[in-house]
Length: 96
Picture 1 (cartoon, one colour):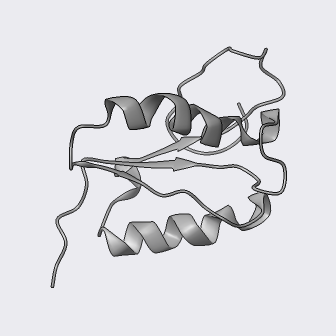
Picture 2 (picture 1 turned 30 degrees about the vertical axis):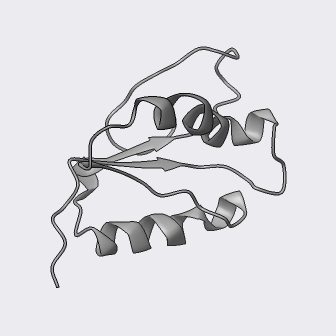
């Protein structure tokens, strides 16, 4: 059975060992906002349950499961270089 790739795959990087902290702000964001507004089957959410440095395994599994491309992925994460509440969008990996 082949699954149709999602229009958007959302992956909140977080550390479940530190809930309700800035290090898990991406997960809190999804819980608070996106689940209220998610109405499209074309949006998939992959919430890692492992420590932060192992979140990539979940992301890789989700990419394979939904046959998604890297371009379909939005990674949500904290950034201590930004002020709390400040949002930045960027394409590609690396610092910044």
